[in-house]
Structure formats: structure tokens, C-alpha cells
Amino acid sequence: MNYKDSEFQAFSHQILFWYRSNPRDLPWRGTQDPYKIWLSEIILQQTRVAQGLPYYYKFVNQYPTVKDLALAPQEEVLRLWQGLGYYSRARNLHSCAIYIYKELDGKFPTSYEGLLKLKGVGSYTASAIASFAFGEAKAVVDGNVFRVLARYFGIETDIASSKAKKEFESLANKIIPQDEPGEFNQAIMDFGSRQCVPLNPDCESCPLSGSCFAKQQNMVKELPVKINKVKVKERNLHYYVVKCGNEWVWKKRTSGDIWEGLFDFPLSEKEKPTKAHPWEDFEAEEIQEYPKKYRHILSHQKLNATFSELEIPQKNKEKLAAWCEEEGFLLVNEEQIDYLAKPKLIVNFLTDQGI
Picture 1 (cartoon, rainbow, N blue to C red):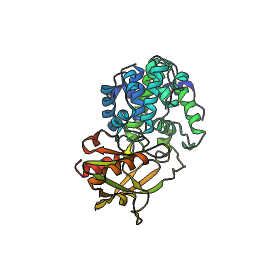
Picture 2: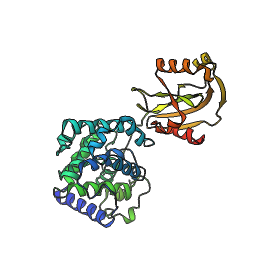
Picture 3: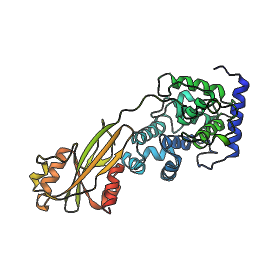
Picture 4: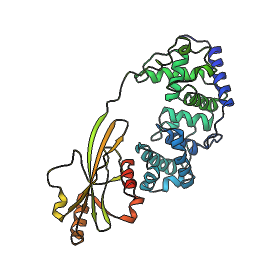
């Protein structure tokens, strides 16, 4: 479809008018501090504002500057991130902070192109920082923006296709006002998250309804188009909660799988195994098999987890400690468990046990 510049200007004007008439007080708005903007954008990736807001406050309080974050141990950063999911974001956040502090003298790049070179920063985050902090007219295109543009302009390109990002970014960069890019980017994202919502949007109160393609063509439910479905893998995890006195056996997860850098229990990835487990060598006694089954859903995986508790006699503690060191497990005192960064599934189990 061909649109005139005047139509783009009318669209951006209406979006900005709606935004100014429906203000939302968020702590990262009204600031041009690239650190706080970057932090908020990383936290809010694939996360709702209501869920991400407490984490933003925790990080700003714990690490008020990029230097503070860079000097923090990674395990501490992961522990603070616990429960937010997508832990690669936290690892990239920490690595990026170290790079900025050590290689860039603690200063963020001031352009979109420079920001793109940072670890964990893609075109969306680079556009957000460049426009909010430095006034560069680079349009942000997230799921909310895809939806608003697809519905208003009648774009039927599959947003999961390879060409969609380029097409939508091109359109968004034609629309963005050169004199107030940061405010417009915030406005159109807010409009998508609060007004032009995925299901049952209130089109009757929408200021764009009179010129919205989807509204006029009765295609609100059909747009945006997303054909490709993510294939979800189902996994069965059986955890062994192995105790020796007041110490528990833990495993730090390594790269190449979910939850890298977090701690969970020794496990067998299938239904509870019938063959002997290695702790029989330590005269382990199975105290109980917990009846509750836990289900945890990730973006690409569905996890089904069960737990058994095993007790190893104190007389075999030294033997167990030697085996743990050799096999890459850790013996952790019960009082120290809270300081380990753990996936939400494990946190839920511990909570149910009053720990």
C-alpha cells in the first residue's frame, strides 16, 4: 500500500496525542541515562511490565551504575534475576556491563550502530537506547509495534517470516517523527500494550479506528498474521534430593542446555529410573518420593518434574564429598541454599517444602 507523508504524520500525531492523554508512570521514563534505559529494555524482553518492574528496582538498587554491575559476581547477578526466566539475558547483561566498564571506560556508545555491537543488544534494544537516551530517530519494532502497524496499515505479511522484520522496520522508520523519536517509540509500544491489545481490543474507544484498515475490513482478529509455530519439546526430569546431614548435593548447570549457570539437583531425564542410582555406593536410603508432579513451561520446552529424597549416612560424608568433587557436584549447607541462583521450578519445589 502507498501512503503519503501526511498520512504518516497524522498517524504519529494521533499516537502521540493518545500517549500524552494516557500517561503511565514508569521509572525508566523521563531519564536519558543509557544504563537505566538499557537495563529496563533487557529486563522487559519477553516480560510483562508488571513482572519486570520489581526486578528493575532490585537491579538499580543493587547496581546503581554499570560499573557496579560489571564488578558483581555472575552468580550474584543470576541470583537477583531468579524467577524472571530466559537466563541468557542475565548472562549477556553481565558480560555487556563488563565490556562497557573495561573496554569503553564505562560509557555507552551514543549511536544505534555503536550500540548494536554490544553483546545481547539487537536492533530493537539499540533503537530504544539510541532514541530514548540520544534522540536518534530509529524506530523500535517489537511485538506491540508489529500488531499496531499490521492492523492499521493492513499488512498481511507473516510476522514470523524472514522478510517481516525488514518490511516493518522500514515502515516504522518512515513514520517516526524526527523531532521526538524517543517519545514516539514509547508511545507506539504503549499503544500496542494497552490499547491495541492482542485479544478483544476496545476498537470503539480507539482514536485510530476511523482510519484503521483492520477495523474497517473487520480483520482485527486476523492481523497480525503469524503462521509459523514454535515446535515445543516435552521433557521428563526426575530429581534426586540427596542429603547428608544438613548438606545437600547440588549441580551447577553448564552450557548447551536450559538454565546455564543456575543450580539444581542431580537428575535423570526420564521417568523415575528403575536401575540403581550412583548413591547406592554411599548406602543411600530413599526417604520418600514426593507425590506432587511439577510442570514448568518454557518458550520451546515443557518440563515435567518429579522428586525423590535420599539420605546418605554421615559416616560416608567424606566419600560423598570426594565423589562430588570428582563428578562436578557441590555439597551445600542447608543454610546457604537461599544464596544459590535456582530455576523457578526448583524454587517452587523448595517453597512447597517450607525452605
